[in-house]
Length: 53
Figure (tube, rainbow, N blue to C red):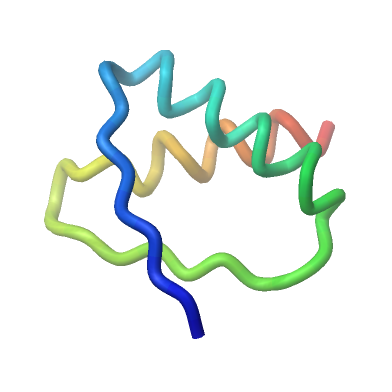
């Protein structure tokens, strides 16, 4: 399993990145999110969901 650490500028950048993940993965595979409270997991998830339509 691979691990990737990203530092994004703000909430909007996180949503945009989530949309990009959605387009790249086309809804296939698993993405595990881990982080402290307030790290942006929900914001990233919202971007992915929006990106999937």
